Image 1 (tube, one colour):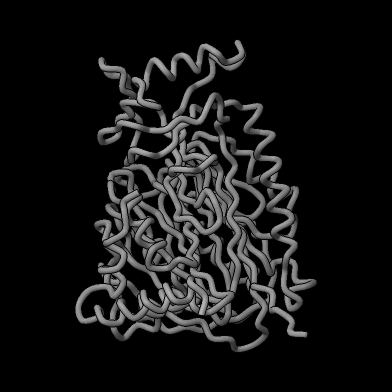
Image 2 (image 1 turned 45 degrees about the vertical axis):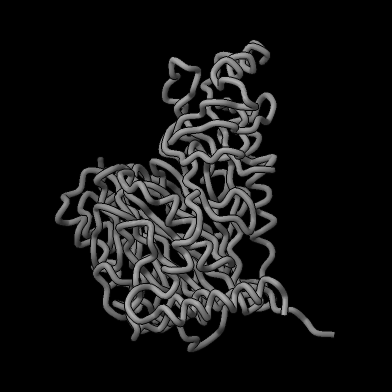
Length: 470
């Protein structure tokens, strides 16, 4: 048995013993270290018909719900996205749901959906949008998450006032949703089709992935710890999503949530490739964080942080000195990429306060500058990698134009052209997503996800290729 499988089995056994009340993964995971609208009569859509799924649903509230997708026809996956700028929110939702259902195929229900609303819609109408979407796409068999966001991506465009909807038919997968109000993992009902034990054991099965989509309110301070604990409980998981503006509504199946975090988990034999386009360029040397307190960097390489950073800036070329500066932070031994944070203030003793980051002495630090020209070139390279990833389809998916799907979560103040560039370079792959306050993604394969800043994160879903025995 490989070391990874021994760890997975031990974790699963520990989880099974703890199922009596709370989440079976709770005890194991808690031990982890913290780390305006214009009228449009129709929606536009991308995606065609290829797959089918039927699932059962359980209860919700603060407890997680789970449903299982069962293949009733071809095992192919199908993805579709749509967008509408209708002035009536109900009309926009109906138009998107109609076109997404058409994209997936007649009589074929979605496995999951992600709904994004932006603009000045009535809050009562927004509160009903998730439930209406599920009813139109197949009822309680559809697991749904989403949020009110700064901008939505769907079909062939993006909107700052309207609705964007993405859905997938992924037969053979199991899905769950939950709401988190603290860093601990929430409980899952015993009668659900998917438990934390099932999810933890999935890493024993070679080829299985747990894809996680997470949205958190900006006031939720525990999102970083939650992401770490999710990865500890499910080492084969990949988490994407973002942080929405404080007070924005988030969708969780039929409900809306204003605080905490909501999440969709998908377990199955698929691949979820993630790609991050960074908006800040690393400059200067990589230094060691030798003294920190809360979110204040006090000393780097045993010297006061601020004078050392100023010295680094002084050595930059003239065309870089006027660019906005960020501080990149990484785990000990890392050479990047780093999690970048804005510098909020400089203390009298030479310390530097950074935004929303738990610091740990021994981590590594490097200055970054927000360089638009560099970011554009970097994004082009990332999208080329996305194009290569989308081509790696299984033999069953060959010839199926929408058998891979993609989600993009980007900085609300960032480059809005990344979605357009993706469509141009990766035609035939439906793209959905949102522009948010911050983004969530892993910076390297196999690592826990982080809350990022000034990035565009792209996740590409596709059915895993079957290995051929000789």
